[in-house]
Picture 1: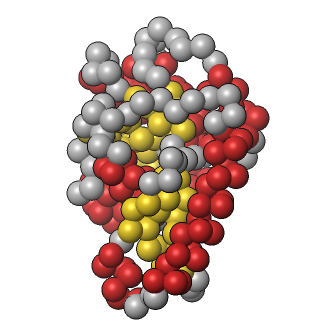
Picture 2: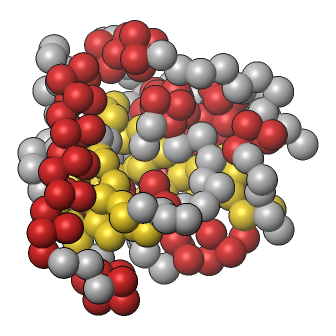
Length: 218
């Protein structure tokens, strides 16, 4: 079974997340495509919608090695185990972190020009994406959210491979996945329509007026 598009996937996830109504949750899209999924969930929960802006700190591969992440506001989260395993110098870490900050600054300039981030400390956060093929982006985002002292993290994705689910489920308070698969070559293969989501489209979702809680078809 494939999803028609990201909106349908978001509607189906929203059905599973209805118990969070009244929990003062915030729904965050993990990417531009994830924001389309997140918007459907936010509508059903009557929750604020935002995008989580992060940038991975990586050493060159192959494959690239995830060493940490930079979050909006300058927050840096390091994976000290990976740093020890790959014996990267302090100067090297500084260069890699600066590169990640530059990439994040470009995205922040686009998304935060007119849209302030929604406060999330002490709140339940629903972190939504259109799929998790490797889990690397979700892992990065989860570490940033923990450092920002959210109360509870609910990760919601339409599709992901079972090994990724097993790993990420240990990092969050709740994990909702509609289609666990033995393996997943590419997220787009789980959709009939999977167009690129432009910054302008993502910004339109962030600029819209908050909606009252809605129902979705069963």
